[in-house]
Image 1 (cartoon, rainbow, N blue to C red):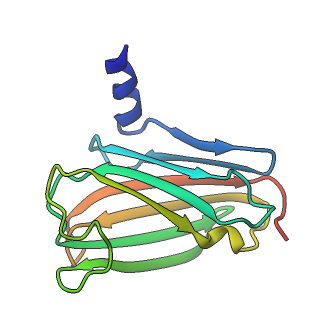
Image 2 (cartoon, rainbow, N blue to C red):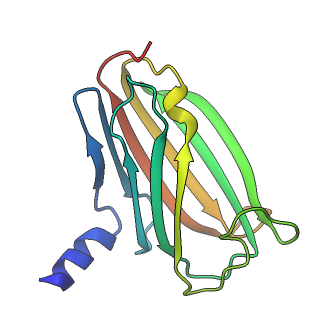
Length: 155
């Protein structure tokens, strides 16, 4: 039974619901073909009361993390709304604890997401997150497709 649950949670393409409430639904899928040892959750599951979200991440990387670049692409109701690229680990003077971790070590972290302060109009959001293990962004180590459905305006 545990093996089946593990298979479902970490199979590429399997959807993981983060949360659902009267004003918000959050879920994600992997958009690459690699199975990942990865879990992510967020609380509270609302967007109207403007409290910051607390996120918890557990991940076992498949390569050493000397360089790490994250690229976010956000679409709102089918139109591209944001493109954001951030170098998280550059190999020197890195500020994140994940930087310098070795292949197979477990990353377990909690952090705040300030996005709950943004006024989101009602609609469907798709957030594609590409994570690369090098600066020229040629070695993608993970791809996540987040779906966020805002059920009422948060103004």
